[in-house]
Image (tube, rainbow, N blue to C red; front, side, top):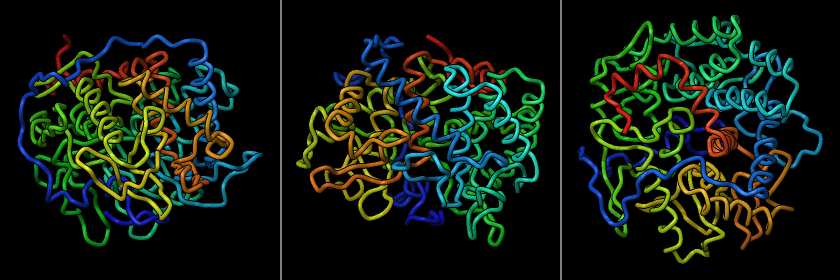
Length: 439
């Protein structure tokens, strides 16, 4: 993967830097003393929790409205969190994934009346119209990073199937939520034109991307990660589907850590969160796993991993995933351990895990705001990362990190994103074809 325009590494690329060290093989989950079954939902929230989450959601929705170009609808990859008036950041790099989160954010903002309904609908229509044309694509797939005003891809940026999938999840959420004939038509056209088999590049797993100058990237989406949504959207395509057998073609490596036993790669925590933001895996399983329960176990293991380090982590202060740090952008976390773990905390690690470990994650988020809010909280909510012991608080927020925090907070409260997205007939059909059944 190519470098982020403003950092050293892409989020998706970070998950593949040490792919040669991955565990391999496919195995059915075994129940151990630390294997956690899915908990009932929604979790009971008290009044203070509800007020806290509502404000966090409202602030995140503001980012996706203010830090997007009103003509193209593209959302900035990152922006300063310390602005007082909501002026659009001077940076010009948009992220196709942030735009997907942003479209879902507009649905949440509409449902919760955070913004006027007519303004939201106009923004959604403008976004879909621009992304249908003239936004550049290759066989329907979008480039990872683009100019926020023109839509033109940045130099040496790949056509990205996973980021296209995140955008499409946002588009399909809009199609289901607004029930508007224009939105439905635009969203359906965007989905229908994606040539999913092309991105397989002759194999059974997806290539990680494609570059105009050199063609397909060599690495593939061939082990369990955030890409479950990619395979399901492709299997469910009404026009260019891939064979459902591709669902069985990526490996599901297992890790055992202090009694926890779960499917993961040598990747940051976000891989257990992203697909779950839209696809409802609760009390469903395929031939290999209950992926909701797997994420519950992964988050519990991650908390235990953090607390076991001599880095200042406590019940009130833990959580890492790919994010900013004092020296740029990095992929860090565990288990197994990865990255330059230095005692920093990344708020979206716990915010994105809210449906999986509610009380523990809420405790961290509320503690961070209570203790460091003056420094760590800004116009759009918590900063991307912080390390209070060395007085470092990131000035920026990242669209994808705010996005996963927002969507999972809303799913915890109401299940709105799950219920809305799963109204799309293609998503239900895809899960059926992949072998999922409820229990």
